[in-house]
Image (cartoon, rainbow over all chains, first blue to last red; front, side, top):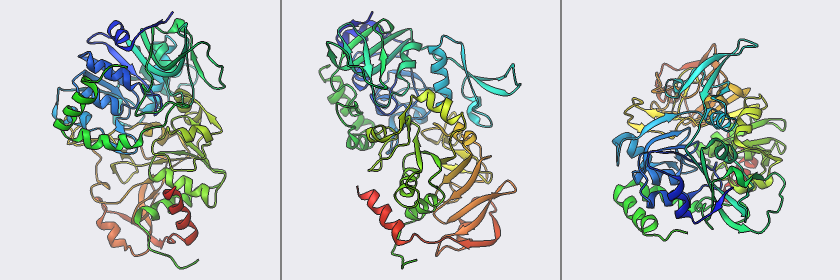
Amino acid sequence: MADIVSLPDAVAELVRDGDSVALEGFTHLIPHAAGHELIRQGRRDLTLIRMTPDVVYDQLIGAGCARKLTFSWGGNPGVGSLHRLRDAVENDWPRALELEEHSHAGMAAAYAAGASNLPFGVLRGYAGTDLAQHAPIAWVDCPFTGERLAAVRAHRPDVGIVHAQQADRRGNAQLWGIAGIQKEVVLASARSLVTVEEIVEELDPRPGAVVLPSWTIDAVAPAPGGARPSYAHGYYARDNDFYAEWDRISRDRDTFTSWLDEHVLKAVPV
Amino acid sequence: MSAVAEYTPDEMMAVEAARRLGDDTVCFVGIGLPSLAANLARATHAPRCTLVYESGTIGAKPYRLPLSIGDGELAETADAVVSVPEMFAYWLQGGRIDVGFLGAAQIDRHGNLNSTVIGPYDRPKVRLPGAGGAPEIATSVRDVFVLLRQSPRTFVERLDFVSSVGSRVRVVVTDLGILAPRDGELTLTHVHRGVSVEDARAATGWELRVADDVDETDPPDERELTALRELKAR
């Protein structure tokens, strides 16, 4: 059963230095507040996993929390590059960053395999690309047809973190709109944290919603606005201006460091 | 066709790409020019064209051009919203998408694309965002359309990294003209108005193969240009 706790307590309890941590959200419900709490608590040597590392991963990398990044597309959507990610890869600042690089389809298959308690996922992918040399994949022959397919090692993060719109008092969580890969991340991870916009007495059933039963989650933490500048369908819109502004903030190390100091390190946790 | 106003190279590219989509096309769309082209097709000759964004929205009908592939309006207007693993497994790998748009930092004469690094992988000069959905889009859709500005830096003899393969690339629309594969090699088939074959050769980092019958594309007509600018102004 999920405990309903504060975000600082949840992060302190669930995330340790050296853990592999997946904070997921595919263009929606991105768990920014939880990422900031990881930075404030000074977590180090994390292996960060995410299909689309964007602004909050740029912040975690620039803050020196990560040793390794497992991903398939690392950019600022609709804007351009992630400058902190680039600085880490190109110049080892603030530290060297190991990369494990996939395609989206490969990442999705790896999470689905993890959620299914399988050792690998299988897909018709990677063929002919140089990615095949940089991702932990292998080639397998279909036992029925002989077709050669890509096998990708399952993702089994130590901790999965997602943001949802609501949880009830027993810790059942519900999210809706673009649901991304959040269900798979929670089910694939050894421990999981769901931050939520609000705690409600009873969840309203919604067509197409993803419901994560309380017993699949370790902790639920209220974090109203916790996806900003990403959005929460039905609660608030994406702050497109901030994504554009991040390009300027993150381009320069000093500007980034001051921003981090003012808006994350000295900020009061939600 | 009515007299044509001034237009930009990007507008020319979006219009040429949009012309290739029909009412029956199921189209995998990324942000930027592909999204502009697909929505332009919807606003002009192909109102029933099906737009699929990789965030999981199938049949999205945005009024405004989205800034990200996961904007809320895509989900609100979609025929169906599916999860990411379902999108890639059932819909893309399942062979249900006709056309996929791709861009890149580099292309070679076979339509292979690089969106990963400039320079060596382990110590890149420029670390690009990465392949994302491209490797499987390139091999799962029926037809790949590439939209890319043409220059010797992007049209290269040898890619620094192969992010996706060119076997299903049917057309490359550039700011100078159009290339299509002939006998496995991208060949210049069209130039845009005001562009010469020599311009296209000079903007290509390999010895560009040129069709015997190079044609000129039609410039955007007034309807296309008006619809396109209305879309961008919303």
